[in-house]
Length: 281
Image (tube, rainbow, N blue to C red; front, side, top):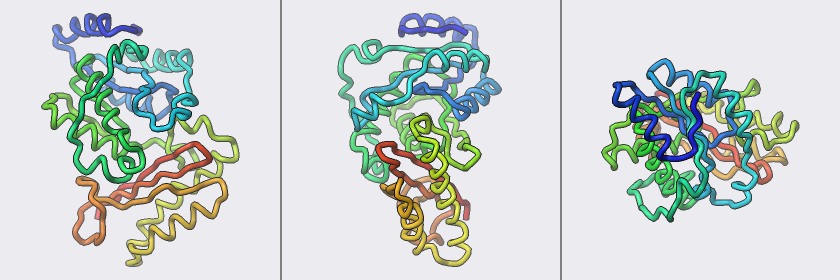
């Protein structure tokens, strides 16, 4: 496994593989790796000749400076995990390497910037689009792999590829969960034992949406779900929305949709947890 810390070293090495006709798979991460990341890498290895993983905690996409400071970092453990997966190349730049100067580009992300994550984290997706576009330009992957836990981010990346005429194929990969149902996330490392145990309520609650649909009580679900979660003193629901899986438009009547996705964000103290479930109608 090759570890590269500069753009020049990375592009030089990858150009050899590209000139040899090798297919490049790419898994962008912010480190603090877990089984969810490893699942993406394993899929990439099956579909490509070379798998590249980036580790970069992007400072611009954090709305909360304290969240950035406290974001889990353990490069030694990350590299050990990556070595065991058979990853071919790890790109580990620092801030100056990725931002020699401010990135002031603006991307037309449409309604994705005004709903759910876009609404509660203003500017976040512009910064996500900016860093991902930089990484795509450096790695030049044939395929890039993203987990469905960050459902809205996945739509942003697909939109980015569309508006930049990128040739990279975006592969959407299933959510990997803890035994108690909590979606795997690097931020789970910041939860106490009790918080981790209680956080099972998030998935348990949104997973009841199908029961409400069967009983023709769709309109009652959001109010019920918020009450279920917020009655636990540790948690405060920031939002819960049910959207069309393809357009992310807010669902008002399910008869007009083929597939819906329930998205949720919950605060446990200062730790923000997100999740979603998809239901085909």
